[in-house]
Length: 506
Length: 108
Image 1: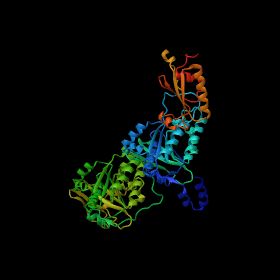
Image 2 (image 1 turned 90 degrees about the vertical axis):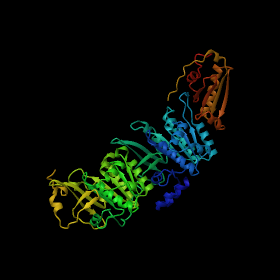
Image 3 (image 1 turned 120 degrees about the horizontal axis):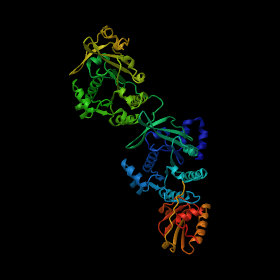
Image 4 (image 1 turned 120 degrees about the vertical axis):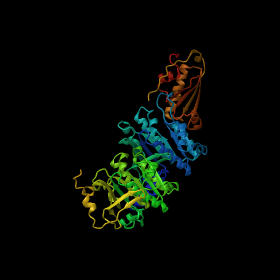
């Protein structure tokens, strides 16, 4: 340890070099190693603190399992949970601990104190250390997780003795060079935090995890509080506990690494391609805005169908309706999506926005991006994303999904349902308009005694496009876009309130 | 955590029986030495001639400590007569130990 600190001083002029020299042990937890700049401090102690059910123990166990795979056997000391229930819970996630235990790659040590035990006078944890010593040597352990160390501390009446014993434990861990995770429960608004404050000073790395409820939706966050001798991501990062374990979702980088816009891809409708000067740019972000019933979903499905027929996979994330009901409602404008779903080029994923927090939604979306490798993604509708909690949550979800798509060169269609008649004012779409490349506006307005549909391309980055209003109809054969009529003033003058928002309607 | 009081008094048949103890110590550290001394005194006073003490030094024999799930030292386990009793600490609180072992009211 000492050597690495000294070299660090010498190389201070080249901070990047220094970081490499701090020995680290990867946890194997997706995203966490990224936040930690490679992993936990090797041979040192990391404190993971958080409330009940915040995922502390899961982080510890996953780190041990990764170690067992990577040739670093580990010991799990359980002060609170029974070894048998840890095994059982792990099995529920598809992790079978027993073979690892048999192969001496993992050892579960039940360190709970029986409630029958009588305490009469002072005592120490020397026996625990002696047992750990023996186990460590026998299985050549490199990692150790001490779960719920607070349960041990509660045995002591005196804060002084608590500290002494923990220092003894810490010294022992350092002497053995074990990479350690110690978990401790923190109860907010209680003296317990100050009670364990000394742990924060003792540890070389401190990670806080928590679970909070905003707008009735639970979200998990983690933050690295400190990391001696290393840089780390300083933000709060969302994470999820999925059936596969903990996944942290850091913003992957602080620079935008967007892939440049690709060639034009057909919108699926020849007239619309003309309006768009050849189609959408692949890899672009397209916002389709319109009032209810203006044909937004139809427009997106026309594109999806055309793309799928070209063999380009489309992921359709639907927050408004189920795949079945979307498929059946698209039959009326003559779009049959069933064969595309069947042959695997179109994947429809329907979610209830309020069912999960932002990070779980993101997790599912990113997982689908990785597994399905789509060329285009449709999100229907971004207005529904507010139900993930708030406008802010929707923004977070959409922004990060869009970033992920842009990094992969995936075309992203965001559908936004405008609630008012003044559609233009709603184009901003939850604050994401600045990173939108193309905006297509649809309106559906009464003119005399007929409803008239109009389409206009409001913004089209990196390509020319018509800035005219185009009338269109939705027939049983799809989208029927009228001729672009340069200089035609019907669109604007006939329905000033529709797009101009002069306000006599509201 | 406050130690739990065991107020039971062993029945008369147990009184004549031999008390078998296993005392887990960590070498000669101070709590362990105290526990040895306190236990010896207690046995002399209350169980004269009717006790056996097996001492396990966890620093030498961690396997036995593991087997009996003894993580704290000193730990005293009353093996016989039943029920099994576990007392943790240097046994300095004489009354507590006697109560735990069910020896209160049984003195002299």
